[in-house]
Image 1 (cartoon, rainbow, N blue to C red):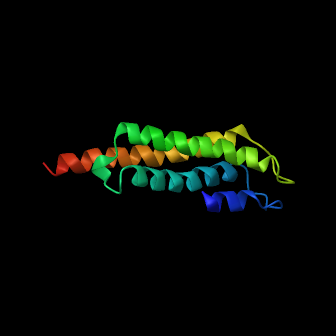
Image 2: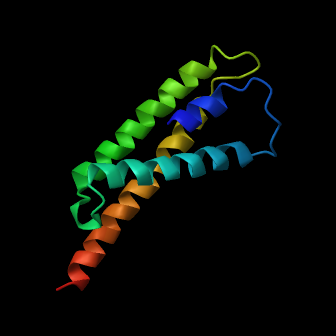
Length: 110
């Protein structure tokens, strides 16, 4: 989260090709989703419950909203609701992917 905050504080960022910005948001928040889900499940994929996946996604989404609010105070930066959507989708893909992986691993152990 500190890295995301630091990058969001940079005023003059290079322009990316159309759509690349949203892909980058999703990728960065995918990483955040992995970290949040693993932390909330104490590093054990079998403990990554549906509740954990939902909570990790919600925390990442709220951080995405706060990041956009932060950017509103940074010169030359813009607030974009679609960035929050990309953040949420990226984090959700990671969280629910780890949840599914936990289910697969627990069934495979049987």
